Length: 192
Image (cartoon, rainbow, N blue to C red):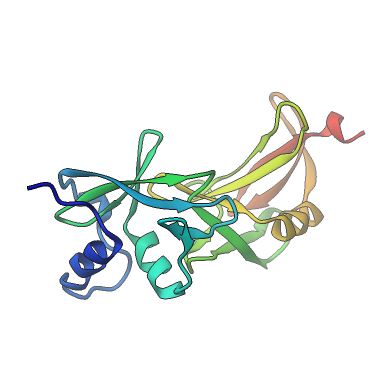
């Protein structure tokens, strides 16, 4: 008998788990692969199931807590099943951040649409990818276990306001600091 993966089935599997603080230990789960689910995360962070946006924020938060990346593929996992989903860009979107201190002591704490909170630093780097044709930047921060969040446009503009130029072995870069780490955004020469 072949079982078709379903959003309801995943929700029920998770509801049966004992309650705990923090995210589920997805990194410890290695259930059998059960196939693909018609679920997609759009670039803006909207989750779709069978072509329809998932309107319940609590359900999206639940699904995001069981998201896992293996290689270039994304899966929703429970202790008993693993289903593939489509992610257009990054599986999360950072919609805001807080700033503590200034200069070398600056600390940036990011908040995602799915209520993850992450401090940018050595274990949670910020990276910027520029489109080869347009030069348009796409900024990301590592949230947890191989999962990144695309930093939304308004937050990226705020980051730029906090930026400074620093010399690195590969030249002068414009970037931002957090938790003692400088994260390069663009070569200084490209800003002239």
